[in-house]
Image (cartoon, rainbow, N blue to C red; front, side, top):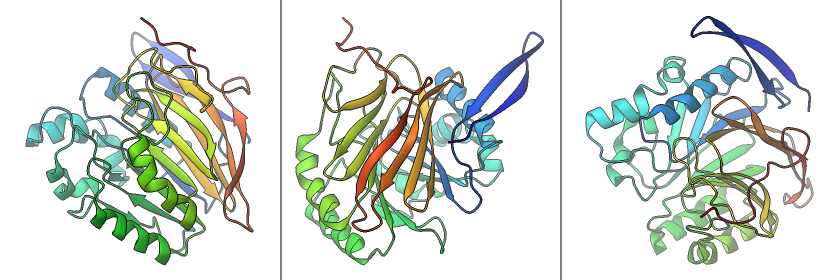
Length: 308
């Protein structure tokens, strides 16, 4: 992937030059979006990540963001929406960037009716970013995955003619986290559907770190739960982990073009933590491999054992 570096002047005790590194193809006509998770704190860490997202959008003009849950910690009063969503992302909202939310365990179901979350009053929903896009997104409520939701998802996946199918929700079916780890019950419910109906990529949160999981049964899994919360040193040694980062805050940028999905994970200080391309077979529509790595061409690393 080509690299684009720009210098941004920041007024803070004088002018400081900060290099921003974009490793995505950034092609015209591709599907571009950002991924954030566990965001709703309203604190300095959420604001720092939000500033980096705004800065990178000057290079990579994504039109929408998916949110993998825990959008509001500690209440859903008007001032909570203002402090923990509207103010941090005001520059993006002012540029008509759309946010598509899913519900986390710290969220209230009433958030589905908050118009800027674009949930349409539903706990789970699907959308295409445009009529011509070759991708459909499926936002699930992993807090309560009942038979009704499973039946809905089955019908939606069956009816989708999109080449790329991307699911996003809160609890990770696969995780190397020491605090929570893999949600095996959820995996037992969802993975058969993902495999049968060709879901290609899954984005989740809940674990307060970044992790890229080795593809499982033709499905690529990411955890992006550190956009405002951090559980430092929580990634444990695991054969699941291809890349991980649990010593700082992060968000993701993603681009889909043809049979390639390119991704870049960026810290709250603007450093590239992980980057690469997921390739799917044009014949089977399944993920067949991932190329790329972290800042020096290798996957981002995390401790092999949880810090005490």
